[in-house]
Image 1 (cartoon, rainbow, N blue to C red):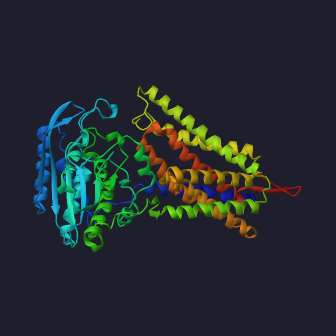
Image 2: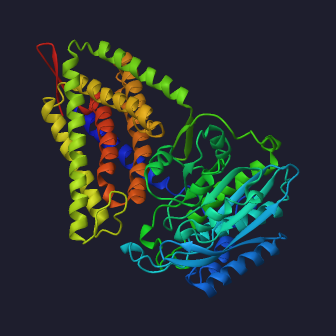
Image 3: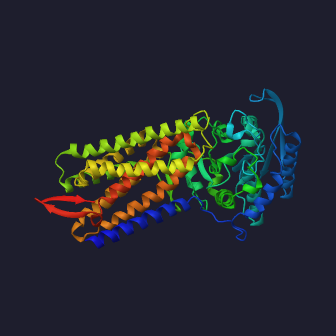
Length: 559
């Protein structure tokens, strides 16, 4: 028995380690390409950025701003295109209390039909913003928005070099003044010609310099929009990100485009925030894997749209409900809200089956663990909130839930909080369950909490429901299989949900840390606790992990 337990512990440790590594490695799904002609060439993209990001080129850096604009115009002409300049004089800039001239760049590539896909980004870089301590110096704009500009230029070049048949056309809009209030986009949406017959739009941004290029925002009722997005080589998105982004005060040019009813998506890197809107947003800090990932999403989508006659229909991308989607490893999972309701019903049925199989007569014992799990999770979130408040005070920063970057030792603090939360949780559950003697009640209680949260999120924040539905489904399904075949002792199959849950949650927690910054430590701790209780719940159902002794026909577990 002891040897079997040791082997199980070693196997569990390996699964946890390997799954965590797989989850973290999924943050870089693309490898730099220089040979495959069906993908963008990252070295060509970098060459564009080297010319764009020589110096800061905000709307106030007049000489350099003009140089970058002229460079882009020349590059479009080199591709055989005829860029058109839309000039807007004396546009009032609220932040500087000045009036500035703006010039948007517009390009149109006609197809056989009147249907268009639009590629959009901006060409101005960020000026120093004294009101934001992390952005007190100007940016060279290598990532923001050099990543977007180089991706658009190389996409058009690759489309032409591969002689892709244009059943549908391409429009390109490079806006001015995005960094100082989406100024160019606000003017552009007034121009009928620019957005006429645009049925899909890809806006390209960068809030950092590295990490995956995440599709973090979509137009409403996105099921058909997501079908086209799924044609990318390396899709990377979580349906919770558009839901969260709606709640934030941030905006990009895409915000203005949504206002006129355009279907589309918004893509950005989120990691490397320390370089965002600073002089370190430079060529030296370009991440080739991240840059390649933009191309591995944008180019296939454009190719599919322009070559497929289906998208000649103006209504091809209209209608439908919002989809639920997420990445697990390198697999992009996508399903409808209807499927989500089916999964909820299945989870409910499996919980009832397990409750009957375990022979639990009093639901109160199970509800005890539902309450303990909930209370511990809330406590860790409260403590996380307190830690972030204290960190802001110590670092002399104004506390903001969604903007508290560049905190000293933040990664170390974050890891310590996770370790303490996990150890504390195991000790609490071990104590309250009498050394896991009530492991069946604990299992049902944990599943009930996941089930309740699944229902709440399905109603209030459906895009985030998968974070609870997925663990609840995996655990209830595999525990049920384990119980049906209990005589065969196949309890090690519980390693499967452990692995899958970690592969999902490791990148999720990391990316939310990047996106929301240290101020949202309380939110991260929610995800940490859901992952923790899911893993622990799976572990207690591995029989060889627990010593079994019979006393008075009652099963007692000693960990």
